[in-house]
Length: 123
Image 1 (spheres, rainbow, N blue to C red):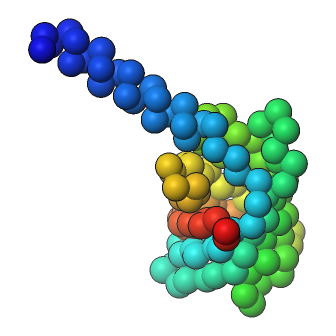
Image 2 (cartoon, helix red, strand yellow):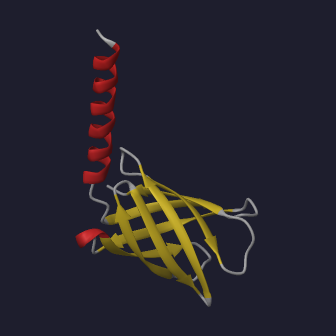
């Protein structure tokens, strides 16, 4: 097989994978597992709703944390979320995986560093 044909096949497979991730519906309930910037962990649930036109809303119910909510926007396999927790504003950027899992990195005003968060669909 020629090098050009191999490259074209690889490009097609990559585009197909991106299209599949982009076509996944993200509305629904998720199990949350996260890590704060200081290394401590947290857990709970989240619900994403209203995903028409790439826009959505998200609500978190985390153990030992006041409820929080935010608004989001999806572009392809990236979901950006602006949220409020108490008097602080935050930002999360998630990447959508093939299995519907959202892996994110977040920050919030008044803290140093970034945290990590994984949203796993509850089916």
